[in-house]
Every structure is written in structure tokens, then in C-alpha cells.
Amino acid sequence: MNKPPQFSSNLVATHKYRFQSNGNNRESVTVGDILGAIGGIGTSATTVAAIASSFQVQSIQVWAPPASQGSVATILLEWSGSANSPNVAISDTSSSVTTPARVNSRPPKNSQAAFWQNLSSASEILFLLNAPTGSIIDFTVKFILNNDETLGTAYIVTVTTAVLNVGYYLALDGPSTNQFRPVALFTTS
Image (cartoon, rainbow, N blue to C red; front, side, top):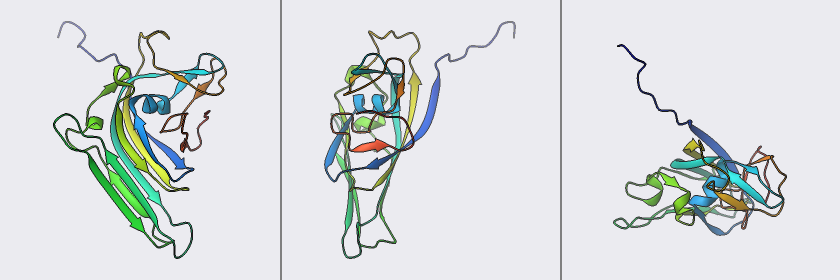
């Protein structure tokens, strides 16, 4: 070979993020919410710019223990279908404090979340999740970091408070509902 081989210059990473539920509501998770959860940088007192330009959901695992003996915990994960596929709902319930309810799922074939996403579809709902208070959510995502995007073309999230040039990891369901908050990562709402 007389020249260097071709290579992909995009910075691609796969990471498992952990979130904890602090509510018991069914929340929608959009493309924009996930871009914020992957991470961002404070650009003003009320905005965060996403560090990723695109992503693909790999999997979601949720564990939900009942609050007390005799009560139940139910998880509901509903993947949004695309133009040619239905929504797919997955659920599990437990009434044992020693065995939590558990959902382990990958995006179904042809669901919205099975495809690569970018900021052009920021308001698109990829899935709905109801995970009771105290539930643990492991969210694995493959993403491409911004390369030559400027702040004008990066996805911008409005938050209550941010500090210029500080890194933040937002709630999986976004800062407006802020129910699924990141574990052990710096965040804001």
C-alpha cells in the first residue's frame, strides 16, 4: 500500500448512563432529551449546548422495587413505532421487596429509537417510561460527538440555571419534567 488507509474521523462512543426515578409519572423521552442527557456545556445562565450531534439507543434496563412489603411496583416502557410499525409496550410488576420488577429491552426493529437520531428531529418521542420512585434506569447509547458544529448549530437546551463553560448531564426525560435524574453526574434542571 502506497498511502495511508481511509479512516472514520468522527469521535464515536458507547456509554451506559444511570438514572434514578424521583416520581411515578409516565414521561415521554425525546431526541432532544437524550442529547441533553448525553451531556452538554453551559452557554449562558439558562442554556446548555449538547456535546453530541447524533446517537442511537442501544438498550434500557429498569429495576423497580416495591416501596414496602404488600405494595407493588410496575414498570412500563413503550417504544414509539415508526410510519410502518406499531408502538411496542413492555411491562413488569413485582410485589416482593427482595425481587424488584425488571425490564431489559433493546429498541424493536423499525421503532423510532432503532434508527440514528440527530438534532433535526429533537422533538420526536422515542419512548415513554413509567418507573416508580426509586427505580434505577440504565440507559446505553452510542453517540457521535460534535465535530465542526458551532453553538449556532448544536442542540441548545433551556434550563433553570447553568454556568458558562461548565459541563452538565441532564435528566433522561429533560429538564422540564426532570423525573429521571442522572446518578453520580453533575446536573441541573
